[in-house]
Structure formats: C-alpha cells, structure tokens
Image (tube, rainbow, N blue to C red; front, side):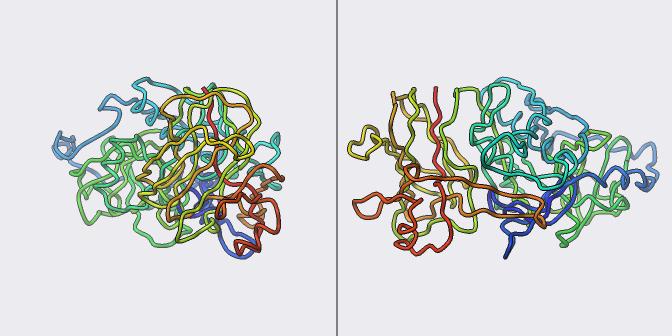
Length: 438
C-alpha cells in the first residue's frame, strides 16, 4: 500500500505510501512523494482478466543466457503473503534478508510484521507516528523503515547497516547492484487489474504509465530474464524481457514485470537494505533526516554528536547525500578538547551507510564528528506532516547533543543563535551521526 508524499530522494523520498496506495504532503510542499498501501489491492486482484491462451508447444522456459535469480544463485528469497497493506514491509524484508546473505554468507529470516512496531509504534519519544489510521492497513515506504531501524530499533538482535538508494534508471546498473547488494526494494504501478495476467505458470505485469497515482505497490526485484516473451503479458510489451520480483500479494510468488514497466523513480527511489548482528546497540539523537533541507556549503561541513554512553565503539553510521562523498570521522572527548581517533572514508553511493572502524575503541563521554567534504550534511529538520496529516514526523532535541564546527569553534545546533549564524530560520534539531557498539 502506498502512502502519499513523505520523503523523496534517497531515503527521504517518502513516496506515495504503499501499503498498496496514497500521496504524502508537507505543510507547504511534499518532502517525499508517496507511501504505499495495499488495502484496496485484493479487491482489484479478484477481477484480473483471464490470460490469453498459449499453445502447448509454445510454452516459455527460460534459458541460461540473460537470466539471473538470486534464489538460483544461492541467495534464498522468501516468498510470503502480506497482511493488510504491508507490501512495503515485505519488500523491505526480502531486501534485508538477501543483503545479509550476500554480506555474511548466512541465511536469515525476518518477520516483516515485526518491522511495523519500530516504524509506527507509539512507544518511542520521536520518529514517525500515524494520526487516526491503522498501521497494518495504512502503508509506508522504505525511507521510514531506514530511518527507524538505523536508529537502533532493531529486532531479533539485528540492526540496519545499509540503506543505499539507486537514483540510476539504467537496467545494467540495477543488475550490477542486485548481484552486489541483494534484492532491490522498489514501487511499481499495480492498481489496474487489466494490466496483469497469468501465462503458463508466470504471473505477469505490463503497465506503462507516468501517473504517480498508479504506483501503488511495493515489490523486491530479485532477478531478471532478458528473453521473457513480450507476448506473455496481457498487453503485449514493446520488447522481450522482465524483472523477476518477489511479490507479497495473495499468491505470493515471483511476479514478472515487463521492462516497459518502469520502477518508481517518481515517488520511491529504489533502495538496497541490509541488517547485521555485529553490533549490540546504537547511540543516536536523530530519528531521520530532512532530505529537502540539509546543511549545505561549498566548503566542508563538520557536524558532531556528543554521547554519554560507555562501551566499545565499533562503527559510525551516517547518510551520504551525494555520490562519491568523502568524509572524515573523528572521535573526541565530550568537550572537543582531544581527538582520540581519525578515519577517512570514500562513500561511493548515496543513502544510509555504516562505516566500520579499523579497530574498536573504548568510549564513555565522547563526541563523534563527521566532516562531509564539499557536500551536504544530514540533519533532522523540523516537525513535519505527510499524507494529508496522517503521518507525523516528530523530532526531539536539546542542548548539548549536536554541534556544528565553524572555524575552530563548535556551536550547538539547538541554540537559536547558531541557526542565525548559518542562515537557517527553520528548526534544525539534531545531526544524523550514530555510534554502533560491539
């Protein structure tokens, strides 16, 4: 199911919420595009037109050339039927499961419904909340999942360690990333039954549209078949070929989506997710970032979070808001008097990324600073509403948590004077830097 407009671009493209349908809007302008909902999808599926007859000697069997499926390549793909409008959670789970398998060489199974509480649950102080609608039926998008799970709202001992987005519509790039990172979470247009059919064991979809309202379902692309017959769609495609996707609707099978059917770049930028069990907990002050209003500068931007959380720091998490972002990570004492650790990294992709330290360090009262070289630095931003007020983003911050370095001095982001100094009239709240402990 899709929400409406929530966050756009990388993660924060909160698209039409898909649970399977919607359009999220900010008070003034959309922060993202839509959130998915599947509440109406089951009724539409019941009137799927009958398939065209296929001669017995004309049945299609894929060959090895131009074919790839993660499952066939030894990366298990869990096919499950969703509950209510939760296609977005099931697509996210497939992406995380396959991402973990590729990264760690072990199979895990994630209960998609366990993602619902950390994303929309009321038992947290800040984050995403729903106003007057049911979480199971309403829908959502990947950015909401990423923001919630990256903040340490793990389940079954796992936390998010990757939420990379792919703003590249080149099919060859998509294929390369699927092999490297696992299934790609994405939205597709799926609201018109006459665009779907069932041909000789293959569930197919060919839906060519530029209308954002048609994009009402989330799936996970797990492979492709370059030679899938163009005639095996209810409306014949312009070319052979199909994306093989894990579909969570009632039949919960592989869904062959024509190459003519474009993934949802209008509302829900594709993302690759992964979980890890390497870290015990996450120190954080933010609950997500405002993609529309980062701190920008032609020069370097340096932000820092101060934590009072003893343990062994093993990694740092943050968002890269542009491709090929160079960053410098430094760990200070909590007064910024002494630098105890430095590490440089090149982040090729955009999105949420966890950078493993070369070696864990003992910390107690300390600060993690990240310099984003000649780029944009992620911050929470103000209180916001999406999807006609049904989704509420509530950030909380206080003095002494997040800072920006100007010259040789550190300024508290929660101080109104800091906003004036950097030319910001809106509420900045916290910066998006996290400490992951081993």
